[in-house]
Amino acid sequence: MAIKLHASFAVHPGAWLRMEFIAPYGLSVTVAAEKLGVTRQAMSNLLNGKAGLSAEMAIRFEKAFGVRADTLLRMQAAHDLAEARMHENSIKVKRVAMAA
Image (cartoon, rainbow, N blue to C red; front, top):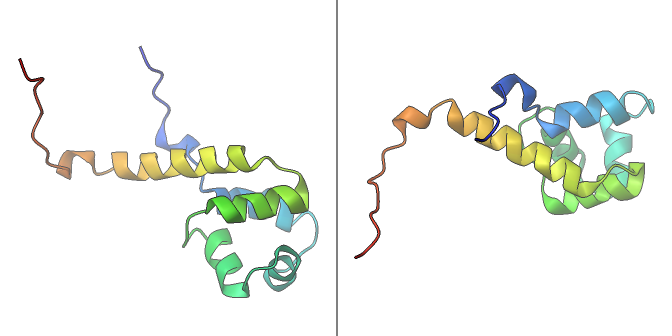
């Protein structure tokens, strides 16, 4: 039996990164973007939850702060699944049966 976590546990990694790294290090979005080698807009979109975390961005955070990229990507996957679960009843599919 799988454990089902409440959607509130699926935090967008951008919000978490802002709270755990960007703010404590005293970085602005602009400075964080410069340090990680990305555009200010890309950093802002991620930190404000308007864009998902890519594998490349996860590696950039790993290199800059030491946080594991795979951990960040699991956070993104959990967030994405929680978002999809919120409207799963509207997802219509036909069950596929095994051929005899």
